[in-house]
Length: 70
Image (tube, rainbow, N blue to C red; front, side, top):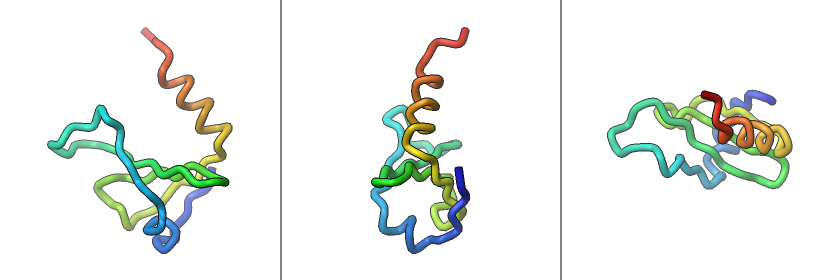
């Protein structure tokens, strides 16, 4: 995982928020999928730092997050 400070890269990506994010703002992240990495940023600071995550690591995270951990 890397922090990418380049706003040029982040502006060229197609960002989206979860369908579970409400319209009232709150604490959301945005995700953009590219060939070599998944990019994650704070939706309240789109010009801020961007995390670059390897696709296999992102897939593992999504699997873990979608499991019931009660």
